[in-house]
Image 1 (cartoon, rainbow, N blue to C red):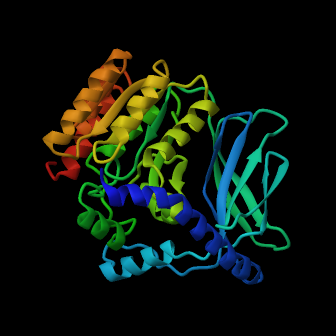
Image 2: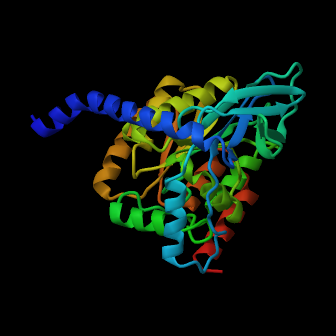
Amino acid sequence: MNLPKTLFKMALPFLERAITAADDLVSDYLQPRRAKGQLVVQSYVGWGNPEQQELQGRVLLPRVTTPPRVGDARWRNFLNVMRRLFSREVGGVEVAGQFQGQEVRGITGPDGYFSLQFQPRSQVLPGWYEVPLRLMGRPEVTRARMQVVGQTAFGIISDLDDTVIQSDVTSVPRMLMTSLTGNARTRMPFPGVGAFYHGLVQQGGGRNPIFYVSSSPWNFFDLLWQFLSYRQIPLGPLFLRNWGFDLLGGHGDYKHGVIERIFARYPDMKFVLVGDSGEHDPQIYAEVVHRHPDRVLAVYIRDVTDAVADEAVLHLREEVRKAGVELVLAADSLYAASHAMAMGLITPEQMRRVQRAVARDYGWA
């Protein structure tokens, strides 16, 4: 038995309560004072179906970050990352949002987060919308994005780090160097991932929705959104984690919870799941298949680990196959795209676009 580990687990609930109590005391002192100054509403991406939608965001004190550029020095990027991480949130502030003739209000919590739930009187047509947000008693308006999803061929749920973005999560030193000293212009996607995702999104004659579920903190929302936009990777709602003590909680439990919410919001939709072998995506997705074998079309796992770790993924592949779903351990986007084409998830023309994109990204063309 590992005594230090056992003692830590026993002490963890008390430590959590102590930190929470201390945080509450600090918040009770700071929040009323912060609420009197200049405030910023950081809106995330709203999502929903024609009957019900939700939008989350956060109220913060202003911060100064410089726009990302390819030639930015690492120290400048590091300072911007630190400004994001050490944000100054504002609780107890009322936020109002208007969507389809309905006004909904919410109060920010101690960490500055708010959530607005909309239920318009009539169904909303699928598409992208703007939602005006304002702080009660203040004239400034922030415009949030909202995606309403209707009937589609399927949906895509994707991880970000080491699935879309090269993050080196299997090496802590390299991961920290990449994450802390890069920006939205210098962080690199995997070759061909944008073309592959565009193929999945465009298949079926409509626009299949994509949802990004990551364990990165909400503090990085703007950086990740800018990265996706700059690299022309399909945009969709991002589900991130609260930067705080709860980041020590289970990665798997968090992702399971988000995926279950997405499945519940779109009960008739089937999904393609995309992740990597660097963390727990294979195990998480295998459990999703076990719970919903008729809701998953395919699982794609980007191989970023060594042969020993791959053995565990290959074992899971056999378990997933028993449920009638293919788990593909893919070395690159081309391998995943070729399987997707064989399944009819992308067209031959979209496959050729992935090939051209990979050749361009590797400098072969």
